[in-house]
Image (cartoon, rainbow over all chains, first blue to last red; front, side, top):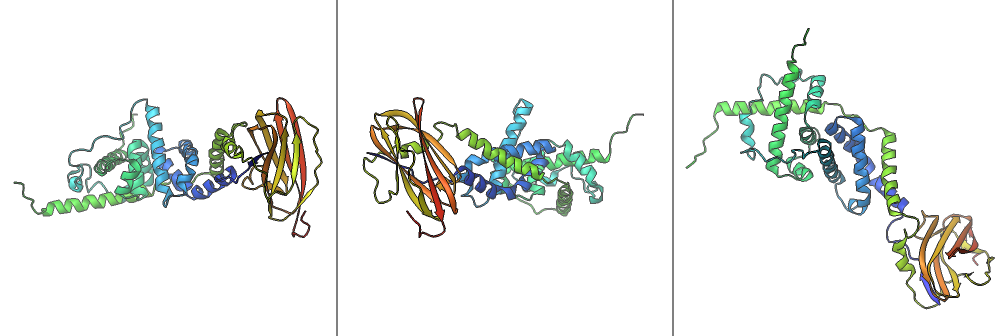
Length: 196
Length: 200
């Protein structure tokens, strides 16, 4: 006589896995969505990005449950998806990984930043409308680094891990992003005269 | 040789201004509103993520292939003390399709053995088990129905199914064997009681 024994599943059933996935990630989705929105600047694109993130993460449930901090890890995955999306949209490699400018490792580089005129940066002038307008004109790579560092307060070492770039490159990128934003804010402050 | 010099007063002032400017800029950025995700989006996104994974991992036949190796652990021995009931499925012989009902205590897990008596070796026989009502297959609580393909040896093949009584009332365990367009089905009714007093 042949005996076949049905053993308990070593892995959780699908329903259990889905519930566990939900439990692990649901609290992080709003923050991830806000980051996605800042990066993409549009609700539908942010939703697409978060949707794709969840689709990619579900098969990694075993990895997820072992993590101490899920959000930076998820953010890292989302960043890679975003970079891929931007690359596809542009049909050419996006310059996310440009070499650091010479001397970028030096924190003192900002001392020679010509774009940071003290008289120009008056807080009262940064109306929400003006900042948002400048933000919308900012490139994706600049939005990402400013969003995570200046808005979400990730440290540079954390960001270097999330974005998988050397610290020096990251500092350089952050510097350029701020400079570009200042330029755009200056433009917003002095809009070209409308033709009449 | 390069010799570091102390920062000049002008440099310090400029740096202080830049730091202050960065902080002002930072505060302005933090005020940019970012919308919350729509609740229906979150629900839909989770459903899609987990549903897609399930669909990708579950073609109907052979989807439980990871189980087959376990099911095909042929020991060649009779089931031991865990045997509670033996149901017989005759693929090529008359079948007893009216086994006695079984009574379980709530939360009890019991091995229900299905005896498959095959006249000859059968490759690619399909076995489908359906658990309904108050009972479920232990370890497969979320799956009312599981099926897989396996090989049946000539003679008796015992399929040991761990059934758990998860609520009081009545449940059914249905075993279906399919091969070459022929089907044999056996249904056993299980009664789940609060206590173990009525155990059969």
